[in-house]
Length: 303
Ligand code: SIN
Image 1 (cartoon, rainbow, N blue to C red):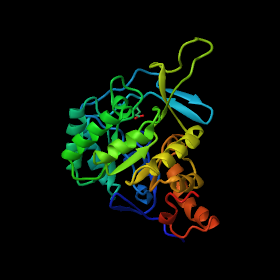
Image 2: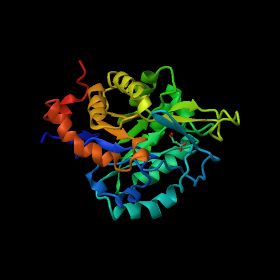
Image 3: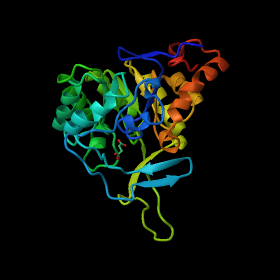
Image 4: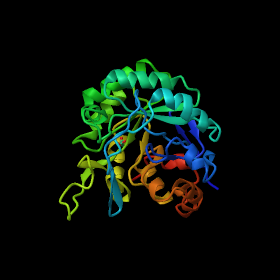
């Protein structure tokens, strides 16, 4: 069997597969189905300073080859994540976890990251500047190089762990935003979050989603994600975590060829809770098929 381990910002992962934030809860929910220690790691539910109930329902619209969500960063708030969710996770996951953080101001990002940075279970901070579902929230930071850099700089000042900035595809020039984050001290970039989308119910003539618009994810967006990962990986020197519509071991390999050091799997977990398990189990077969001895060798290997 070939070598599947990769190094993400100084931390070794047994394999590059990472369930994406918002599709895997706080992990222990999935531990009822299989041993989640087989994952590279996972990115837990987007956490904010204060608890959030989220957006009005309906929050989900199904689409061919994908779905739209407008969850609105529902989460119990950082204090409860630390006092209740992480202890539950500790019982079933013995690897460093990726803490996904959102905020409505630079101070909120700083507050939440500083708290999570002190948790020994946390390996990386994934700072989401790309949520499309909150007005004046995360995405406004992710749509400007200056604002994304400001969040990065502020978070880096109060943390010791690798900071990975999660970027939005809903911009004209994602490369300039990625480079601004790198210059501001980011240790890695993850992309892409969801594409802003909308569905309309023909009977009621109303938007399907109460918030009208939401983030489109699923296998339909995979080619867009590969393109953006390729563009960003070629422009920065820090590691890139690729995501967006990944649903198979072949997709993981393709993302890595585009330049991803590790690969997040999102909507696929909502269709099939065993998706990540199956992808990891299938990776050796696909590596053998394409004569890959060591996954690290193929990062950015597209010709
Ligand atoms: C949400 O909670 O609305 C989704 C989070 C995100 O897409 O960043």
